Image 1 (cartoon, helix red, strand yellow):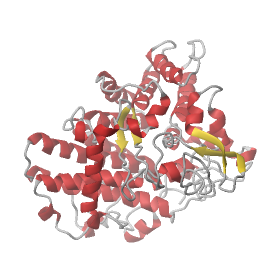
Image 2: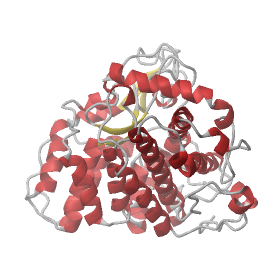
Image 3: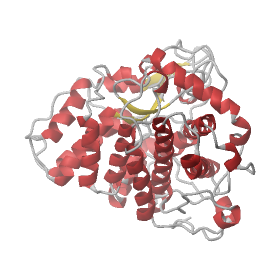
Image 4: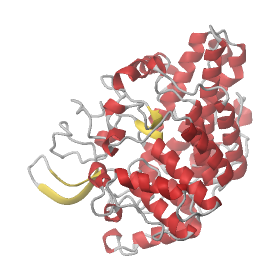
Length: 488
């Protein structure tokens, strides 16, 4: 699939370079993107094409660094030996990465608002292209509000270009209102986006990208009927399938392939446009043919708890995690666990020059979310949900569950979340999956994890306040109408 996706990925980079002066090197929160007159800028088809490229580029930026660091480190997938405020639960409202997360999502929202405010008056060669760009803007805005909602709780709702003095007086809405607005955007996007993209448009959002995210949102809010409805449309499309080989999900030669419903796009050969996760998850002093230039740092040291969560013979473990490594001084470290999920494809000559994409929605995720919806609506010991779960296990070379193994709704739920943990490790879903199980479950899992002797024997304590990230202090200093989250 790589060659057919090259055109859009390369075009995206060129576009981002063109508009770089107005989108880079800025920490922008709720304030307008810049002082340029957007209404003078967005007129032609090319103007809107450039603008939508900037929104995709914004997603790539935040999902390459701060997002994976914060959300994965907070979970039981990462060892407390990784000395950061998330693993050791010292996170506060002055944290720079959390501020970057907040700022990045608002920057992207500002870009989509500029597009959506003006696109109906734009000059396009075809109505289909106008609809597609409008749908993409709605999809990306909906995604950003969904992310803000589950990470921070209720946030201000800004659906159009707004003067700065008004933005700096906005108050937070409820989390439910934030999710409702996100769902509204994603639903609107499904009516405008194409069902599939080919050739130079591979990698752009489709109707089924929006439906996949919509299903995920409804799972979080426990609206299982709506989740089932959205996810079933993705399945019924027959546009997607699971790769027979799990490793293929993470090869650059399979970018935008049959299992990928939506991915963050990367390209090699241009500065800062490759996937940095290949190198940033391994030590600087590693000596390996997979990492000819070494790593960057051990930002995310994998926990023994995750390693032990894989059943004996699970093929996914060694594709995802490497146990031990040889240093540049030829010293063998036998115990450190490293994420290597994105390092199985073409080996780049330079650090951060890998073009393997990062999946936001994978078809296996769609299937497991659908199975979860079925289970929560009405448990069937030998129903469709069990068949889906066993299909995922079969690819991992694991034994099937027999109906007698999972006789209750609770047992199936536990088995499903266990499967999700090992299937999506290093895809940054674990914290999301913990949070949506509720405070009691999250607190119990995290407390047991932190009580392990290899995780500090209770030195680090889980607090319910971590169910939400803090509203950044810098943002509240500018807008004192923003209430802090409890406990911060």
